[in-house]
Image 1 (cartoon, rainbow, N blue to C red):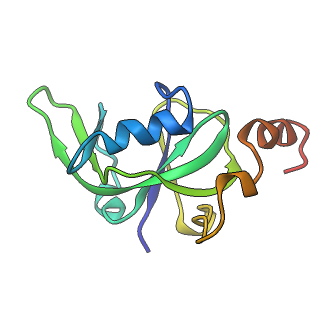
Image 2: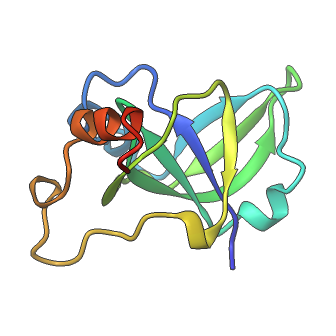
Image 3: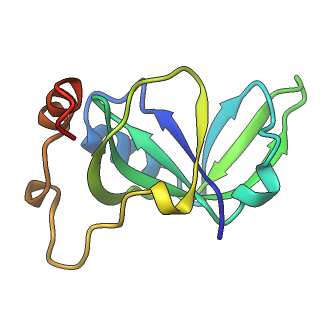
Length: 131
């Protein structure tokens, strides 16, 4: 089972803008990180799960990691946002590992993000300890 990671979609104004940014790259999108994850070999074939408004909203498959000339690392992602069932997730800096059993499932055919809990509601329920 591949290992996944979570990251805040910090520059995205909405899930639609995140999707547009990813899809604007024809072959692969690049995220930059200062440090190579220690478990990076387990993460190839896994996904980067995006956090927006304190909830996991979608994922992008991780293709590989490469080092830049300045010592930082590129995370190569498939240029797509696969919607998942919204799951509350606290904000954090950088990235965090996410095990397969803790990852939300993909939305199925015929399901839409409107069929699941909105991120703001999920966040409020999480604050109350109800989710």
